[in-house]
Length: 111
Image (cartoon, rainbow, N blue to C red):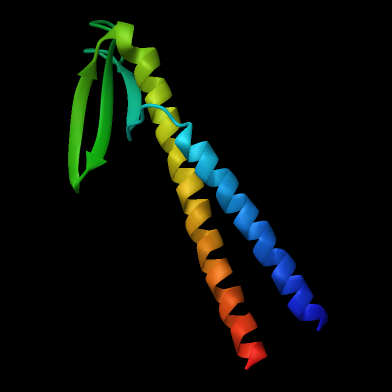
């Protein structure tokens, strides 16, 4: 009986965390995957630049875009938002799996 109470308590914790994740996801602004690097035409002497390059993979295709210096901070924020989005959705999936497993265990114990 103690195990059932603990399982039900954990289910409530999971549900609360999922609701919190949903709220955080709703607040995420613009996002995009990738990494932003500063490049130079001659990287050894650091001449011919700097310029900024965004590299990412989308729909199984690698892409590279040049980013104007005045847009770098916006792109950095979008990348940060994307990483936060991925972290939250990965956590949500893990919690969903745990929730499903615990729910099946509870139903099995009731039978």
